[in-house]
Image 1 (cartoon, one colour):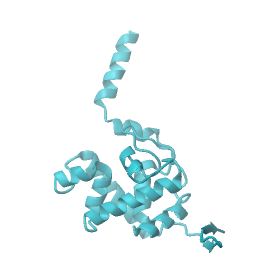
Image 2 (cartoon, rainbow, N blue to C red):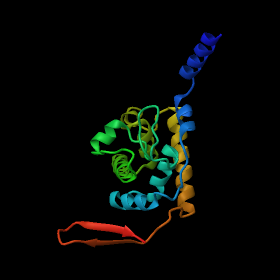
Image 3 (cartoon, one colour):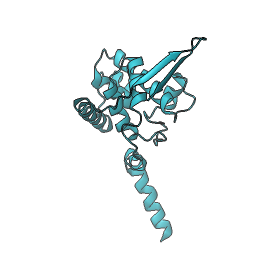
Image 4 (cartoon, rainbow, N blue to C red):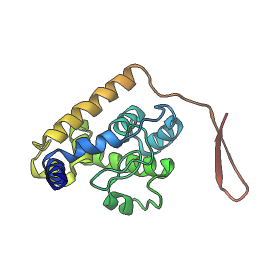
Length: 182
């Protein structure tokens, strides 16, 4: 009986959608916790902070230690190749992860001449898939992903859903820049 139950469980795991199983393991964190970091890197990489926040919501639900079944890590769920290309040392460090994810998103937006649907699809399915299909790939996961990111993007933008704190900076005698908030 135990062998039959184990076989059924194994079979279920293989035929079920792994992304749904992974999604259930994600924890929720405060949505405004990373707003300062999002604003900093969005400004630096010329990407709309509301779009970055929407991606983080969909990718990790603001849980900085999130790991997907496919090996994507951190708040912006960056794949190992992107982490390496961006020189990320600690994928779970919010500054490093959001910085690399925002740079990556900025590149995708530029590649697709500002077409957010294509850039969002490429963030999910990869640049190769979007190029191969000359548009959003016919994957159910990617189509749903684009819709969900755009839903949160519109919601955050409409409600101005980013908490801004006053950020101060100063430069020391060696030229090193320091940033701090209230």
